[in-house]
Length: 300
Image (cartoon, rainbow, N blue to C red; front, top):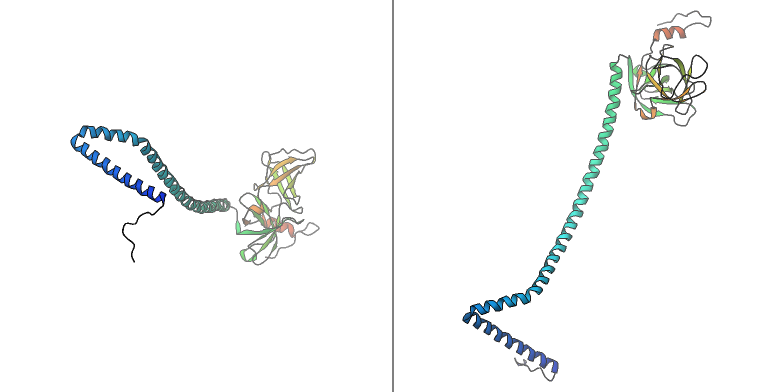
């Protein structure tokens, strides 16, 4: 059986009071609304005053709600901007990494082009180029200072030919294979190079110390005439190396000479050029000389 449409709240005082207050509030709201409607019709000026008074009373509450609404909108906007910024930051970081890689590649290409331009300049200076190759390996801790060049007999490379780079003299060929050649570096103890000082042409010779430096000794014994910063080049004596090839810079004066660092660093010189001996025919004649001083006939 369905319950009646109007049920009494029973004997609960709380329910009875709630129902009574609801009725009173509804009745009061109806009366106030009817009164305001009557005033607006009968006395519009008085109703306007009441409306202004009501607006003044409710203004603080409206301000509070307006501030809450603006704050909520600001929080929502900031949260959206933060999320958007995080997404943009990830994108910018990816672009920065890509640009960083491209910048590194561009710098490497610039260095490579500078080295190649240096080699091209060497060929333009009139040196008789035999072959150009890469230094594919060099000793670092061995007592001997040798390097391996990526060109050999098939490219016209022979023993006792000078090898140099854009920065200066590297050494000379001591062994030749079909496609590779071993180079005795100027820093090796057994590699003696005739040199001179650029400022006044003081003759001297260089001997490697096996640790990346060379010892420069003047031909005339006595007190060392060298100074820190002196530039040393090849002198052309002996007929193997052309004169005026950049060789080394003095870093310390010693009692009988000077300590210098070669300009050409095999570890930082990927390309090297094998050139013709400065006076090939003369050197061949000297090597063919008999122990008694007579010259042997050289067979072509």
